[in-house]
Image 1 (cartoon, one colour):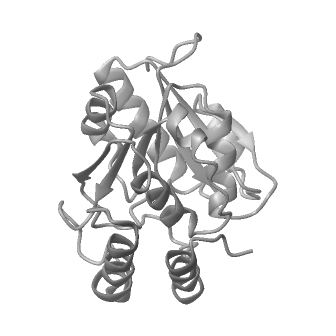
Image 2 (tube, rainbow, N blue to C red):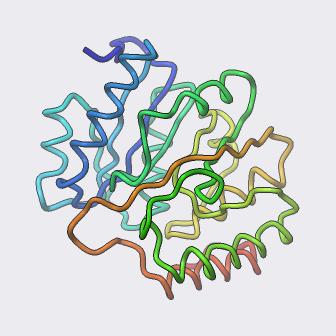
Length: 236
């Protein structure tokens, strides 16, 4: 039994989803085990972006709340989930099973202690072999993160980590607009240029357990991040 209250939960665990039937059950079950062990008042919210593989039905059968986001894109589905979340705090993470949802307690503790934005650092924790493509690990992410740190005057090292937590009130106040992958950079930039308290935590990073190709597009997504870092404007 998980401690998912019928009343307003303190936390929302948000999973953006697009055809994730292979790994979505693993993530939901891992989250449920964490919630049960920690006795945390929370809901699991799956924001589905048009899956055709039965992912929404699987999520509902496992006890998650599912919403449908029609506008395509990583930013679009997360914005939809953020605005639909019932929790006072939101923790988001990709459902490819690369993030260890059994180790969310440091995120919970940081948010409850007053931090407005908490993000993982995959380079500071234990990373499985081949969990990140060579080009991403040694060139793309370090380079774009370096530019982001200089541009937005922040100490965050891993700009593209998808495991993040934030207070619902703070993130909704930022008026985020990016609909694609550059949403990840926009969120950090907006928090960094505000008065909100930010914390980066080391996390473990596992290999993507999906058999199909990743949703990431190395060149085009990298360009979107680069353009946002330079211009601070969404790329439509």
